[in-house]
Length: 403
Image (cartoon, rainbow, N blue to C red; front, top):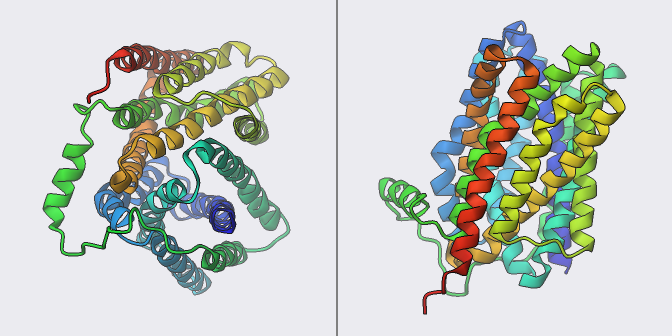
């Protein structure tokens, strides 16, 4: 049990550090672009590219190498790049290109880290304990989303500069790196050996062919439908909800309180999943997505009261935790042992592609309709997609399994 505790603990520290990174990145992006939203959008799009380009390679390595090595290597790289970036800021040489390269480097590390970590859990705990471990990990990640930005805000308020925040980021990742020393060697099987002589073009072709929508097994159904939902949800949480709160209640400081409500609800949902038996089959996931979309569409109706808005946001966050934990558990349970890392890498690629495209999509909706109407439309679309997928998952579950 020491290995799984060390692995999950290190991941929580990395997530807190990621919260610091996200804070400092958007602050610096606003600074170098003079708050030009178009330029910021370009920077964030370029920052995402490593996920799309490196996903197949990251998945392959996660399935063929000692899974502990990738988190160690990527965390070491994060510390090194963060220190170099802090030196650049100190010398006053921060520019658009520098910020883009920094963001892309950090995303490249994340592309390799995420599938290796998520697939490692499959091989460290018994199948019946996956739900509990995923729930505890999700609760820690959600707390990290609260603690990281809050710590950065307090440091900035206290007059500590960008470099100090970056150094705390590097320190937390360094501690996480040291805790990984308690995790032993993790392989998909005793016979799996690293294959570094793979053909890159063949690897990319196989990655997208094997994980295609035409293979509607539980894992791919989970990944593809969740990717479609994230295409709408990502921009709704990042753009529509903050804009709606500011438009209705007139104080941008209240946006932070509402977004924290989502995270607090997610922590509560994660703890519920860890303590009680919450169903996590593919059809259950589709029900959670349906509920999430339906509740989001009602947010604009209930948002006139700020207290009710916070309460409803927390409930949505709770359902969101059920979604996140179900996705991880389904991929771990239903994946072939030699493709767990590839499937997690595929999910990360699909999810981040959806999130990258979500901003422009909801931006068009917000420009074409009122904020309230856009929220209803986005939530209703997610609910409709989930309803169709639920029917498909139920019908497929009734089919006899191939012998």
